[in-house]
Structure formats: C-alpha cells, structure tokens
Image (cartoon, rainbow, N blue to C red; front, side):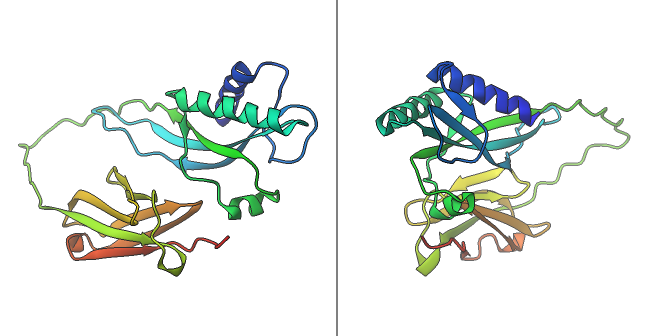
Length: 227
C-alpha cells in the first residue's frame, strides 16, 4: 500500500518535471545529472473522519522533496516548480514548518533547499453488523470543558504552529505566535485526557485528569535540539 503512494508521488513529480529527470526514493545526497529526491521520512497517524459508517484506517506519509542538478540555478528552478505544483494539488499537503537542523544531521547530509509534503493513505473497512437493540435507549449528556495551554521549547521559547491533539477525541489545533492553544468541548469526566504535541520533528504526550480541563493553563515542554 505504501508502495502505491510512492508510485503516485513519482507519477506526480514526473508529470511536473518531465521524463528526463531521475526520481529517487533514497535519502538526499550529492548526485550527477538532474535528480528529484522523494525520501519517505516517516508515517504519522491521521485523525479519523466523522462518519455514520465505520471510518477508514488512515495515515499520512511524510516525504522529503529535494532536487539536484549540476547547475544550482536549475536545481532551484526544479524545486520551485514542484513546490508550487504540490501546493496547488488538493490531494497533497505541503508542511509550513521548515526542516530543522536535527533532521538534516540524522540524514547525514548538509542542509539544502527542500520541503516536506504529506501524502494521505487510507484503507476502507467494511461496516460491522449492528447488534439488535433489546432495551430502551437511554441518553446521558455529560458536562464538557476546555483545555488551554502553552507549548514551550528550549529557554522557555514559545513554539508557534505546534500540533496539539486530544488523543482519541478528534480534537486538533495548532499553537499561535505566543505558543498558546485551546481545545474546547472536551469531556470533564471519564478517563484521563491524553494530549499529544508535535513540532520540529519532536513529539511528546502528556496526561491530564479530564476533570481538570478547566483548571488553569497547562504548560507542555518540547525537548527540541538547539541548532
């Protein structure tokens, strides 16, 4: 299935840059000729869709897009073509965050002009047969609360555009310029609330009692390597 997403991205790139360019799935490195790299960085979960039917299994594939040409200007021109074509494609999601220095270090290559694009991958699941209702329907409406917080990095620096998710509740937001976020309409009773925060390739998860969703501002610290 992932190989099908690889092939779909390869076909997209070839349609933009032409057949004379080599499309490589390998990690970025110096090359000869005209090369477009589409290296699969990681597979990340995607929130489930709201539906009356059984939601599909879905993830997002994060690809690092790089270009190489013996002529640097030609390589930059190639990258620009791909970037704006990906931004115009409704089936692709170009990430707004820059690629941090730690990611380049992990890849073992110097930083270069590049961008990350997310390709959705989903698997449909058949509906389950609903059991027969044998008792009268009872509806209980519980109270709802909200969670406010701030995401901080090294030296208590607020992190902008961090992804904040209430795990299992389909509640997702991003932090503002001051690192603040708010998740409204969360249950104020039940099991502890798991909050997942991700930014700059780093992810952490914290747990908070659901009854404390309105109790002050939660601070989440991400251990982002300093460049």
